[in-house]
Image (cartoon, rainbow, N blue to C red):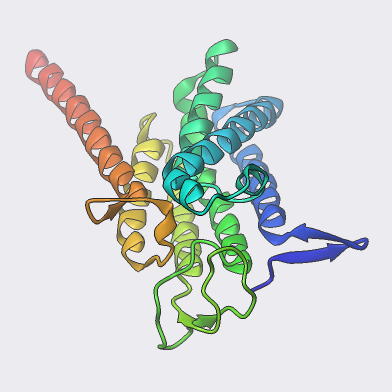
Length: 258
């Protein structure tokens, strides 16, 4: 565990460094990819800032919602609640809202922008998960097999001196693989919305499965499944309905032509 790095005599949270680095690298990747869709670089940067801020608000808000019983039970001070704790899906929802507001406000192509950001989000997310691993949050279940990790510093509810599955690094690896796949698809210039659908479906499946290997129960559970698993199922259902409706429309048009 490396929760803090000392810079000029001050302790800086490692997770914050990784989050900021992931955001910057993802935006850089978006700027490079944007040229293939004739999207202006400054639009990418401005949209990323708006989406990033709204994403932070969304991730913190969902964290407070799912952790409210724990916060009340343990009487956690409000300042500590705001210092740490984020939920990715909250950030994703907030980021989508922020991106939509920017694109809608400047009358830009929603399909192009959402496909672009859906392509690079896994890259930034992967770097953020490394920050989770170093900070000790989002830890895995007890596991003493190959490549297990043991935390020796007590930060929050992170268990110490117990072998754990490094589920954060597993997710980071899978996110990098997803990023590679999305870049390949992006270069093929498929129908608008393809990147969003592939990302949403793939990540929802990844997250749903990996949640079974998470050990941090304070993230919220309902009827034996976590909040993130519920959101994953809802996303899969929504995207599946969307794709089915598109293909039905396409079949109806082909039948009408025939």
